[in-house]
Structures are given as structure tokens and as C-alpha cells.
Image (cartoon, rainbow, N blue to C red):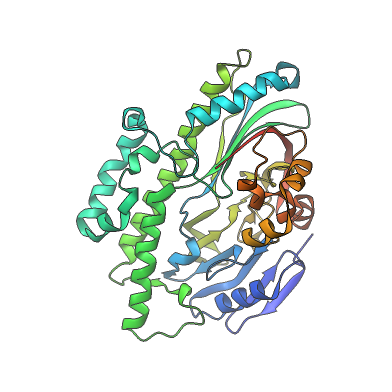
Length: 398
């Protein structure tokens, strides 16, 4: 399905791959399209919904400027998935319950982190020099880290919210492992610190914005290069965090399932990040806030909610979307609204057949709080080709 809605922004247009969009999200997209450094147009994916400053599900190409709050506080958040040599014949409910328990023991979730004696030293060590260079130039970051000072202990941990670890079956009943997480507390601290610096820059230069969360750094400004360095550090940390968790999960599965191998190279992709790319005749900064890169032939992951299908996709390289795709189902209602509208019984019904938490602590993640993933996929048929359809049998939430 091609672009379904076009908004005429004051600087550039907004192209939206759905007509299922609320007025608040339209207003945020219009605010983005009014900024003087936006390149060509703003693209909104079919999972678009309200965010902080910028909508989640937006792709923002900019000339010589980056909006830190558009990148977001979970820098480098994304997905990793790998197919195993096992099939549905190799797993049963008893084994899967043991797998669920093993994953929850091996991978800290929510606010938990690895104990000092379990720090994944080999995964952490490459990140120490870059972090030291940043904190030498920005000693205030050490204060910003606060309770996240044990960033090393959070390598290989899930976090909370919509982050998850799943064991899935594909259309041929083959077993996959898939998980969703980002740069954890340290990414949040880095983002929060630089977002505040950007706001102060706007105040200092008396730049008026339609939303203070659209504060930006211009190339050549005092903090631009340091932000780029910091955000790339956090993106690399997020990718390493997912890989570390994948290895922990595979080791846990090996304790309870028949011997197996990983039969496909893991797909590991960000959906909250910024990168330098070439689009519509110019080298620009592309911020994908809740969107994945879907260049021609590139593999990606588009997950549904904890009771719905997910998809392994191949990008079609659609120029109009800046070679991008939706990053998931996208929320239909806020967490607060979901907990008021749904019950634990609703959650149990909507996650029937999935071994997962079914208590009030995860009602805000109920499938009914999300858009229909199949509609999202239909709306972006010109952006991605579906390679595999996954359905979870185990889901571990933060």
C-alpha cells in the first residue's frame, strides 16, 4: 500500500503510510515539518503514534542538525532474532516452562542487573575507552549516570516496558529466538543529559520552537560532535547488549532442549537511532524514531505484541520512506488507558497458548493496547517483503 495520507507542513510535506492516526500525532508531525533544516519531507510509518516531541514511527532527515529527543532516551533500542535447527517436534509445554524459568534466572529484567560477580567482562571491555573519553570532556555525565553508574552490570539485561524475550515458531514450525531491548540506563542518562544541553542552547540563542522537545544541535555548535560520538557509543552498546542476551538465552535453551545449532546469522537492527545517509541528492542525518532501515535487500524485524505474530522482512529500498519500515505494531492506547480498560482475565485470553506472565503488572502490554500488526504490514507492502512469520510460544517481559 503506498502513502495513504499527506499533510502539508509549513516547510516540507509529511507522508504517512496509514490513515489510522490521531490528531495529536498529526500535530507532532506538522511541528517536525515546520523546522527549517528538515530535508525533502517527513515520513511516518503505519505504526505511527504519539511520542515525546516527535511521533514514534517517524523518519526525519535533517540538514546539518540532529534533534536528540527525536532519537529518544532508549538510544539504539531494537531487535535481534535467530533461527535454530529445532522444530516444534523438539519442544513441548513442560520443556518450554523450564525454558521460561531458565531465561528469567539468567537474564535480569526490569530494574534488575547482573551481580558484580556476573558482569559480562568480555562484552563490556570494548566500551570502556569511549565512555572514559566522553566523561573526561563531560564530567557532568558522571552525575547524570546516577543510579546507572553500574552500566557494566546492565550489559546483557532486558529492562522493562515493552522489552521482551521470545521463543517463536515460524510458518514451517521452526524454532526462533527473538528479543527486544536497547542501551539500558546508560543510554537513558546520555540522552537526558544531551537533551537538556540542546534545550539550553535554544534558550541561549533565543530560538523559538513549536515544542521544547524539538531542541536541536547544529553542526559546528559546541555539543554537536560530542552528541554524535555519545549516541553512536550508546547505539553500539545497545547492539552488543542484544547480542549478549541472545547468547545467554541460547545457553539457557541448551540446558532444556535437544542439541541444536543456530542455522541463520542473527538479524540485529536498531529502531531508535540516527545515522548519516544519502537521500534525494543530499547527505543528511536520518533519525528513525520507532522505525527500522529497510534498504533494498536489507533484513529487519517487525514484531507484534506479546500475543500476536511478528515478521522477519526484507527491505524494498523505497525512497519515499527514506528506505525505512515500521518497527512494530505501535500502541493504540497509553499504558494508563490500557490498565483501566483491560483486566488480567483479558490478558489471559489474548495470550492463550503463550507461556508468559499474565498478571496485572503486564496488563499495560496486552495485545489489545496495540494496533493490529497485520494491518500495519499490509499498509507497508511497498516498504518490505515478508520472509518469515513468527508466533511466540514463550514470552519473557521486563
